[in-house]
Image 1: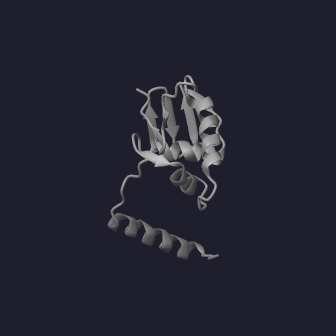
Image 2: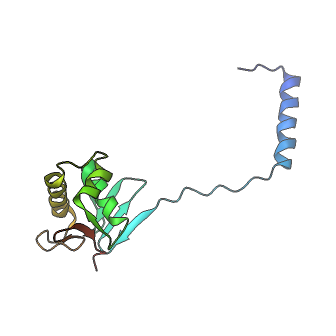
Image 3: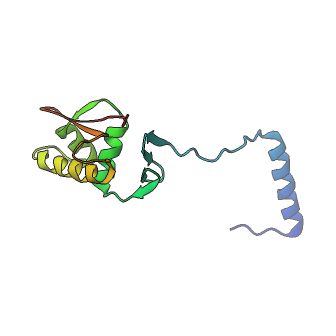
Length: 134
């Protein structure tokens, strides 16, 4: 901590004011909050929120991580092992049922009809992909 007398404090203020005039300052923009937006579904990444038709959906850490992982690359097919390794951050030795359970729970929460998924599609014999919901 620095303690200044009145004269020293005024000198420091003048020096700061002089430096401020010499250093170009940029206008700060509020941070942009990226979101992944699809018909009827919005994922607000910086807020860790998922909205289904404007209503907040409560997701577990693994459900949210899986949704973000798939939705970040719509149309790309991911194996259960890829999803497991990325979201769980572990080696995929017996991941098959874990990923399938999370996908099932996620579909119940975000899909208009979990029996006929719009967003998370199964690619038989391979894994899952995120469709844009159109």
